[in-house]
Length: 113
Image (cartoon, rainbow, N blue to C red; front, top):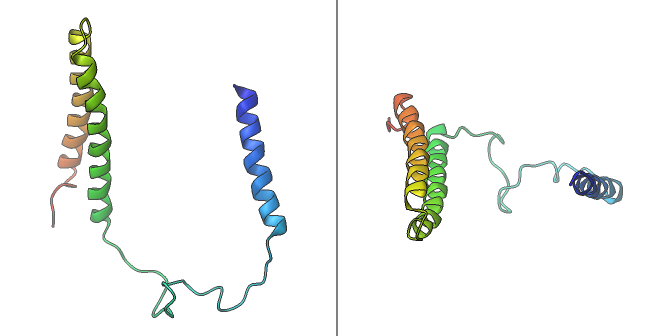
């Protein structure tokens, strides 16, 4: 297992090193401009973005991934002999989700201002 990890790290290091050695380095003013879909940039390269959009997107991703975990649970729950165990495990899982949602609610993340 350790040998495989070492080979993976070496592969990535050699690939990045080779790319750094082989690429042409010719910085020009045009290459140093911020790229905006082929249009000449206007204004500064930095723009303010509301963080709350990222928070909502992050919460959506969390609950979308969690819903992916609910499907295998439903299929295992239907199998004989697994009912009580999977039910308890799923309530623990949903409890973690509820604690995270409660934390986000208490921090005021879910309030759209």
